[in-house]
Image (cartoon, rainbow, N blue to C red; front, top):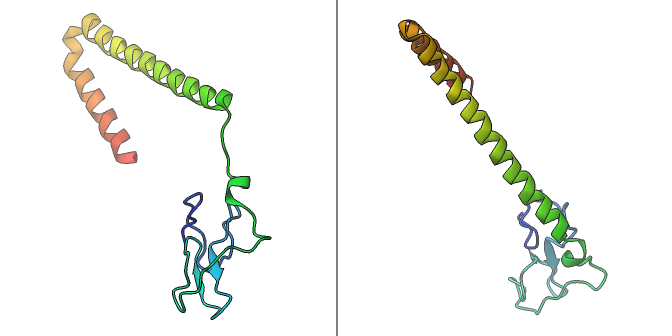
Length: 124
């Protein structure tokens, strides 16, 4: 059963979400039928449903990153992109240097690069 608060897929027999603690089902006080947590009226007898007063609030336990954490995440993602670009450029320059330095052996390098690419793609 999917939690309406945090969208986590929980076990079907669970009563509360394992991430945020929100109720997954509301029991009707009239016919005792279990209804989804977002239900306003009972599906069995149309009685108005309200969550119990002692139920934990989903917003009380929801995780809200601070602006510093969000900024750190953006900086980390940007750093990974920069490092990935630098690694790609070094690989490109290495291949270009190989071709420029040893043009007479180019057919061996292309075979090696093709075999390397095939073995790496088959491992994924």
